[in-house]
Structure formats: C-alpha cells, structure tokens
Image 1 (cartoon, one colour):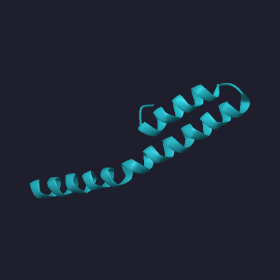
Image 2 (cartoon, rainbow, N blue to C red):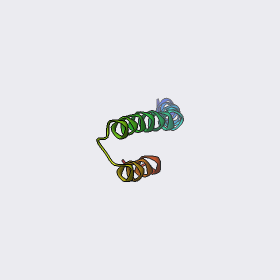
Image 3 (cartoon, rainbow, N blue to C red):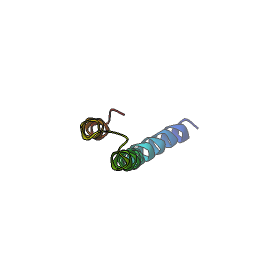
Image 4 (cartoon, one colour):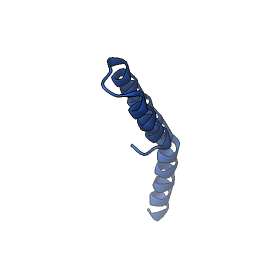
Length: 61
C-alpha cells in the first residue's frame, strides 16, 4: 500500500515536471499574440509594447 502511494507520487511528480513548461509556452504565445494585436490596432504605444513583451518573456505576467 505504502509503496503504491510512493510510486503514484513519483509518477505525478514527473508528469507535472514534464508538462509544466508547455503550459507556460502556450500562455506566452497567446499573450504575445494579444499584445501584437493591440499594437497593430493602435491600442498601445510601441514603448508599452516593448515593456509588456519584456515582462511576458521574463515570466512576470
């Protein structure tokens, strides 16, 4: 019983560790797409675009 719980915990750990970066990548892609659209529509300035893009790329969203 105890061995089964440990095995399950190890499997879950590796699954989350493996797939976590892809979730972040998907978020960055969609955030940058929205940011690009806002710049193209004139909703934000180029200065704002650069600042926000830098924050997204650093992971501070």
